[in-house]
Length: 226
Image 1: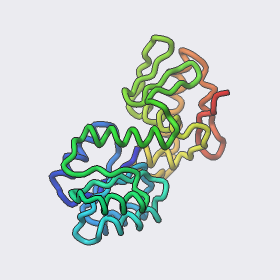
Image 2: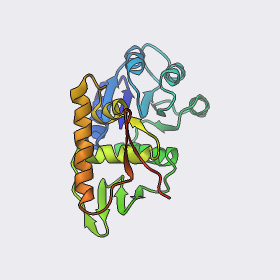
Image 3: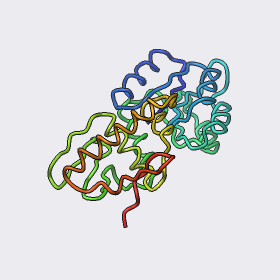
């Protein structure tokens, strides 16, 4: 998943960025509201982590602007402002959560996962698809009791399609949210197709993968199970 981190405290920003990268997120980092708006103008994000105390714009104002660019992202406010009024304002303006500083990085990650589960209607991190069981938190996939080894990008591709079950995702969307950049040429498109082919081959050795559907001229989707 792709995350925009807007934080002017550079040491904290580095720590959050490093932690989330190790947790398999793709991170863009902005230390100012101006840079954040530049990122938002040209990218789509799954999460925006937003500090309120920015040097060039109040964070609540930036939240309003950000939602115009990226209304589908989940927004988490990260701030040293602990008063109830700011917290209520942020939530009323559309923030999904509010995490006061100082905070633990594992707690931030847990809140992000909880938001994802709510957003995509998941009860927990385990999702069944066909004859397979996928644990999105542990990043594992099993058939019966047999664990199946996938590469990092293969699992990222599968999990992102699972979160958007029954929704066709274009190659451009997959490339941006999993690889961190837009498709620029046919080679990028073929790169995604090659990962889908490898995924089908690995899983197909255990059971049918007919639920992983190619949408001609568009991309891919995971069909909703009956």
